[in-house]
Image (cartoon, rainbow over all chains, first blue to last red; front, side, top):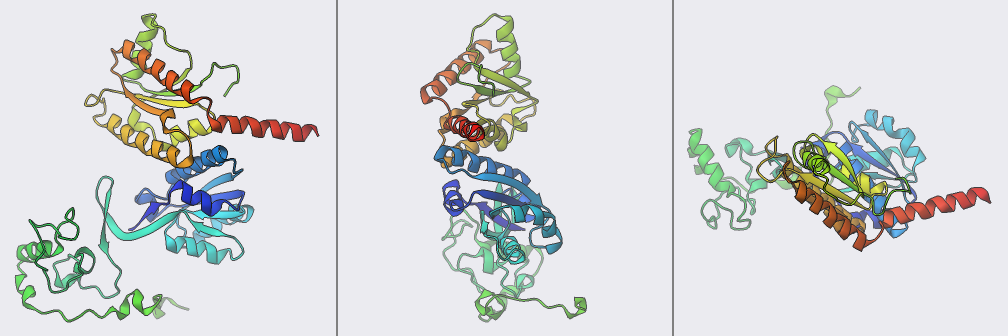
Length: 222
Length: 153
């Protein structure tokens, strides 16, 4: 899922300061699961903004709405009326959702209420960790299902680096060494010989360095 | 919030299994504590969400007291620990919004601790009285007065 974090209330107040009628628009998909931009968080952010508005005399009028998915026009239509009524929209979706709303309503100021951080999973209650960098050419099959591009701080394709201490990463000692995990996993699945292969430098053309990516599926086009 | 209520107004979210029973016991035992609190009974403090506390303050409460079981003795095992985290999150949000975080407090009171419950209420009323009326409420009153004046004109 896409993981995101709330911007601070002072940041949001500064962003919204020129406006009066504000719609806080939540998204019912990834950011609901990572507890940062769903219906409950929309309620929390709206309440905090109302309190800030009254304490600082800002005169905000804040409405709340959450739709199933902000990155999909079919669902965006459900919010069209509320968006039209508002002076500005504070979207608590990921960056894709915010831009989808802005594209659909070209004359409406749309702001991001969250910082979109990474693609990850819920590791334990209240802890999300990054698992995928969306690099565009997946190498997971070579590393026992553990991504060195994302989980090794040095992104080493031919690791380990030698800085690993007691199975921990030397860059982030609070995280496990990805190469230790890869070694153990390959051993467990009987594929240790894969480590004998030298991996050539990664082709980053498929990543963001080649500009914004587009996926075209001719079989789904009319 | 009714204006004829004594100031400050404090909303107390009390767990059914402990603090609410303690409040009940305080009543049966004729213990005195300030009449400023409005008790909301909750099946467990773990049911309380961050927005419950914020909404109470947004609606004009001067303070919010969350009263749960002693740590380690929650009827649902970990509800009071969840509440503790949520109260801390809400306090951080209040700080960010410019409202004193001391207006929100969590206490742990067992069902038999009527004295402690009364003491916690006294301390909360004292803290909130020192802080003065909530600026949220003051602004609400100001806006209402402006609207009324505008309507009269």
